[in-house]
Image (cartoon, rainbow, N blue to C red):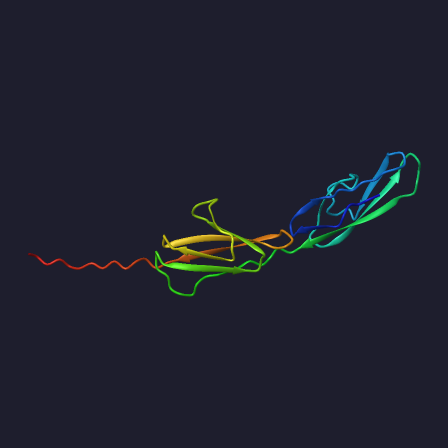
Length: 171
């Protein structure tokens, strides 16, 4: 009996277990415990969902030979996603200014322009942009070393440019 290797998942995720058994008649009664979070306790390879790290025990009994149950344990470790925190410049900005956004809390980052869906702007922890609109919205997604992801949305509202008008004098 082999319940598989210990696994890590991100909070809110599930994982397929790769258990196996060999020998005997090949006809087994399969049972996983605890049952909570196991999609089917009678499957060799169930999907497990858990919000806390814990052990799941696989018990297998040969139904033809009547051998006692053999057991093995697999641990599912639940990893918390990174806390991705965005920092906006504290200066007052105007349209067409160049500014830099920075974030921290993850190992890798992907910046997206939310006005142009699917357009990746960068992959560093900082992004320098020229504000081409008065209201600009970016999303940065951070991934940690466990492949868990989290994101933050940064909204920049720039002051509109000052437009001066001069009265015209009659000629």
